[in-house]
Image (cartoon, rainbow, N blue to C red; front, side, top):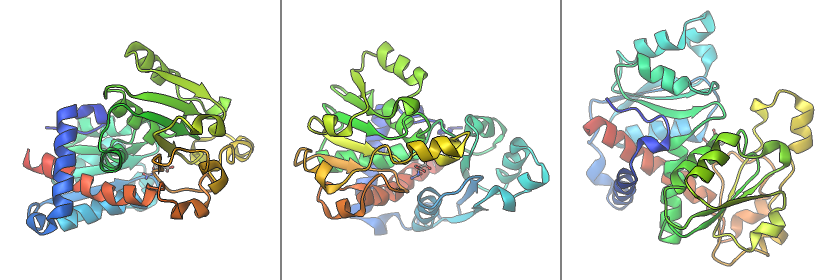
Length: 302
Ligand code: NCD
């Protein structure tokens, strides 16, 4: 049985195949309408979500399957003190695949050990978020026509931003990729990721200046400062507006740079940027649903 805990659980050739399938679903949605008939997805969300949960649910419905689940820990037996293992073991008796989000790092891995069906990690604390990376990869491939030879700026909360961690894992496997990590000192990318980049010989540099980095980027991946992972509110308030992408700052960027953001945004991208042709974050939302459809098919059909 196959679980998707991080993006490296999928080989590069499988990622290519998922992107091909997603492109095909976009082109011929009617051919996929019955593909998951009589199959059930359970969405177990112990943490808030709009895009990830609803795109998983829309994906399963568009494949002709059905959906059960809960959207908060309060409405599950976790609030009565049930262990994650018992919840997952139970739910896996009712469905064919599980997508789970949980505030604790490693929760998806723990769930997979208790499950009788495939578990997809829809975000585990500040650790990983592989299906957001699927959305990111398809967006990049559709916009830039390639995944290799790119200079990628990652900006904002690189310490707690789980989408950044999974994206780095995926993109470091591509030829000629270089990272520019743009963050306040306190929110630098975790040490283990820096060590992995060094081990794999992937070029990267760190900076605190978004303006200074802008001119060299093919992609700018903005992120929200992850308030829910902070130990104290004062630190969050001090750091939350470290980087705000405005029209003026974007004027320094190459004409064909893409701005990505996993969303939700708070203040880090000014709404005036949305009408710039380089703003790709709502295209990313669309790609997310089609990649989740492709992933569900892969797990359900083997
Ligand atoms: C991200 C997440 O949950 O990690 N959102 C998402 O799934 N698109 C990013 C975030 O919450 O900042």
